[in-house]
Length: 354
Image (cartoon, rainbow, N blue to C red; front, side, top):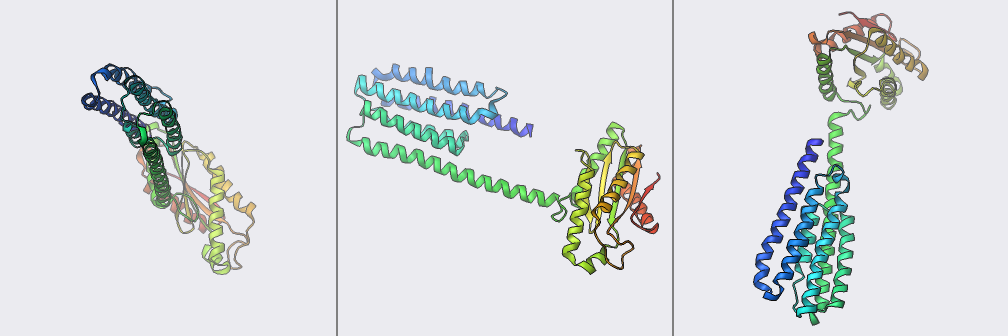
């Protein structure tokens, strides 16, 4: 995330620098348009007001709180550039009766909104402020004569079109992000239990194993499944079976709350929990808590089940030397321990020895 933020800041600084170059390029073109009497005023505005404003924004981009306030900073930049243009229009008309072009107002808006990424609500706010400013300038310095109404309409329509386009763009990007987030969740999480699916479970378990090896801490794997789940499904129906899966998920989430604890649905009614930095006694306590969770649930089982209430069997394994282990081997050992628990009568746990 930090890398992406840094890349975005670099992109914004480049965009600001390009904006300053665009202002400089327009200076060359405007010099051929302006009477020589206006050159000093024009240079003053561009070199001592507009370009310094852009440079201030570049300097502020190195501020550690810049990302939080950047919308305010860029909106202020846009309004400041626009009003400096209005000042030139006003002075040119008041002192020289020269109608300085207003099109820069529109260019500033489109560049700041789309190149610098001003959000919609800031874009519409700046559009209102800029239109009000243009009305005031035209009242104080009617530079465009009988073209004032159409000039005002063009400026207002352009600025509000820019804002509306930004609204549509922001909305599309928001919908795209939500869709991507949903797809990301579907690719990692089991929709029924809302736990990690088998692939994501394996990936995160490999990462936790690498952590355990690096820091030389223990790694434990718990494998469990619901006892006589087929009988439960056949008797109560698949909807109730789904509820039992969700209940098992809820029990596991209530027990394993550390950020490093990995819980996933391995397949069907099978679940896997991977833990780091635990000892054998803590592992036994965790297994007992899972069994207790089902005892407290007190959910009636099918008549032909081994126990009157639904339960689970658990196989667990722990290694204090994870450097010699792999996730597949540990799951394999936990799976064998699970079958031993089944053979012992179910509704119990079996801790495998390594």
